[in-house]
Amino acid sequence: MRRRDCILILVVGLIGQAWPGGEEFARADVQYFPIPAISSSKNDGNDFGMIVPALITGPDGELKHLIAPMVIYNTIVGVRGTLNLFHYQPGGRELRGIASWSEKIERRFLVSYVDPGFSNGRYNIGFSVSHFKNATVRFFGLGPTTPLYDETNYTASETRFNWKFGIYANEVTQVAFSQRFRHMDAIDPGATRLPFTGARFPTVSGVEGATILGERISFHYDTRNNLVTPTDGMAVTAYAEINHNFHPGAQPLYSRYGVEIKKLFASESKRAILVVRGDFQATIGTDVPFYELSSLGGQNNLRGYGVDRYIDKHLVAFSVEERIHVLRTRLAGVMADFEIAPFVDTGQVFNSFKDVSFKDYRVTPGIGFRGIIRPNVVGRIDYGFSKEGGAVFAGLDFPY
Image (cartoon, rainbow, N blue to C red; front, side):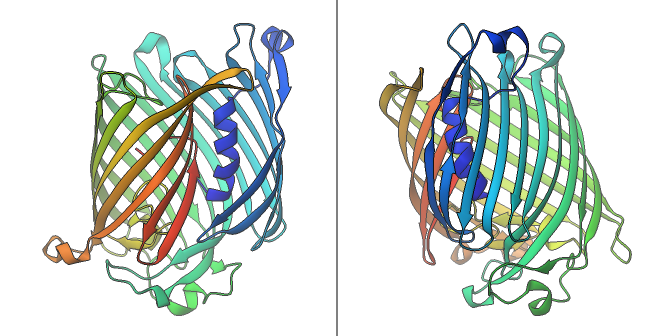
């Protein structure tokens, strides 16, 4: 998710999510919570504006609905209007809708639904449809040592659709089948003054676009005590994916594989939670579009760098984060917990396993600030530091 939208989603998440409807809405309590939006990002420029969420709680006092319009002036793409609609239901079911339109180039439309306990908990289902134009995407070339002076910018215009169907073998084990469709237009010049990616890297695969259909089988082992706001447990995900690129002239097949392990170590009071995460990704094939490869940098790994700072076929990453509870208070009628979270991220991308070298690992320390409405809402802001400066990211989830 883009960082500028995430600044809104951070606020939205701290307050609740929902889709208005029926008698429940008629009996709901509605509150308005105007918030100024001021933020800055390494890739996305500066934002100034206002968010006016309508907060809707049910008769039981739990957050049910939210309608969150916002108007932002961004120093790169101009005025942006965004409407966010959110809905949470018991059992982790979530329905989300986002529509955003910017003065220059950028557009974003998304509808998604997930139900991790479909049919009395026997299945996990979900789907997502989205279309967006992102005018501030960066590309530095391929490899673990790409220099900062090779930074380029392009506009990504793409449409995505994906679905997932998971079957629970027991309470903690799931096998899932999923499929995704991704159509990327030929890249266009971006909205910044940086060189155009297509001019600096004209021979990189994917510059002329891609149309991808992928099928994945994945294994999930998860003993965490909550999917969204866990305080204890372990999660392991492993997957294998085959992809078909239907773009004329492209190599038609390539595959991807990955393993991610997350472990939470909670203190007796659960006021301090140590979280460790290891991630490995591999891409097998030739002529793979560069935006389909593994990447480091962004809100979920190597948080001291901008999104997609390092890109190559394979990835190894490791992170450690200490989530420390500092405050519990009532916010807009609901109880919210606040945390600080010092962290260290490290990792590298590489083209071949023989190229792995400790000198190519990047390390980014930082600190995060979290607001949590249990059991299913997290908002966060993370600041990471690197040799290229700092980066700020916000999101409606934990980074891992």
